[in-house]
Length: 214
Ligand SMILES: [Zn+2]
Image (cartoon, rainbow, N blue to C red; front, side, top):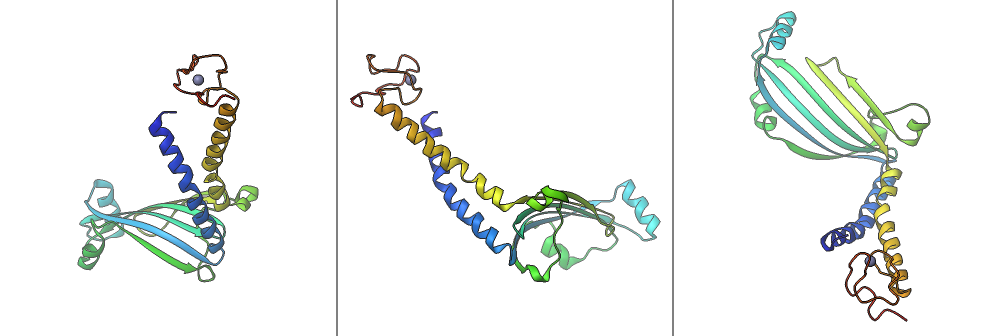
């Protein structure tokens, strides 16, 4: 591991407990409230042939397509649900207020909803995996010209556990290095340095065990 990589590893390992604590808090909160952050991005597009045909079928005079893309992360009863949505509408008249507020103005918003007041979001899998909190579903809504939403859900306990992998690896590494130093082995590769010079003949590590030998 090079110097800068080692620093990155240490920083990530040091930050992990913070992420772990945050995930744990979200997990506990998720049984009472749904924390959500979402981003929506609306743009308008010129009509294409397919859209024109759809508008003709519906019997109205369409001028353009409103195109909306959304991404959201929400917590619900021990799970985190990532949703990606796409909504296309054929529109004849442009709503100026809507345009000012949303079009070409992507924004993030954060909401907190009491879960007693809401229906479960998508992303559920039946069976043991679903019970554990895993899910992946795709929904096509009838509303709009074309719309689809994909929900992927993961159990928050798994996310919390994953944030502990780095700190554990860091501690293991630190213990291994200490063990190698105390036993006259090269700290970076474990080669036996007793009786060799300061430079490790195996990996070239300089000053590996100088002064550490007993
Ligand atoms: Zn070595």
